[in-house]
Length: 314
Image 1 (spheres, one colour):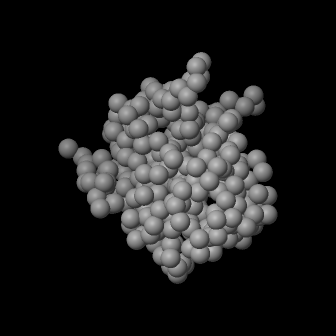
Image 2: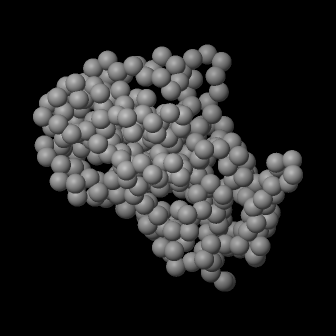
C-alpha cells in the first residue's frame, strides 16, 4: 500500500509561519486558492490531488478571528470532501480560549463551541500552542497536541544575562505555567494579585513574593490590550524590581496595546510568531519576535511518522 504523503496548506491568517514550517520540513506549501466573492463570502478550492494524503492546515487566530475561523472550517470541509486520509488543524493561537467556563449566568462556553465546530467540519486532530487553559483539550474528542513555547522563550531569556532572576505570573491562573518556567530557569517565583471587574480591565492589588533589586520577567500566554501587563510592570517597579521584562506566546496586541507598551517602563516584550505582527508593531524596538516554526515543524513531522510529540519537552 502506498505511504501517505505529508502536505502542508496555509490559510490567510499567518502564511509566513506556514511557509517557515514547510521550509523546516523541506516541503512546498500545498497549492490552493483563497479569495472572496463580491459579498464577502469565502471562496476556497484545493489546486492539487490530496486523496489519501496526510494534510496539515496552518491557520491561527488573528485580528479577524471570526473570519479566519470560518476560513478554517471551509478548508477542513474541502479536504474531507477531497478524501484526504487525515486532516490536522494546526492552530498556533486558539482564539476564544478565554471563554472556557461559565463565570456568570447566561454566557456561552465559546472555547467548547469552537472545538465542536472544528470537529464537525471534519478535523481528525488538532495541533496548537499554549492554550489559555490546558483543560480545553478535554473539549475535544479527537487528539489534541498542546505545544509549549517555553523552550524557545527560555533559550532567549538565558542569553540576556539577567541577574537574580524572578519569574512573575500576572495572575493566579498562570501560576502553574510560571512555576514550571521558573524551575526550568532556576529562578524564583512571584505572583501578581489582580482582579478583573470586566473583560479587558484589570486591577492590580499587590505583589506576592520578593522582587526588590531583582531582574524580573512577567510570563503570560498572551498580551491583548496590555492593560494588565502595564499595571503589573508598574506594581513591580514600585516594589523595587531592578529590570522588568515580559514574555508571552501570543501577541494579540489589540486596542491601545502598542501605545501602552511604548510609553511604559517595560524594558522588553518577548513574543513568538504564532500571530503575525502588524506593520506598526514591527516598528516598536521593545518587541522581540522569536520563531516557533521549527517547534511546529518537528511536531508535524513526529505526528506524520507516528512518533512521540510530548518527548519534545522532556
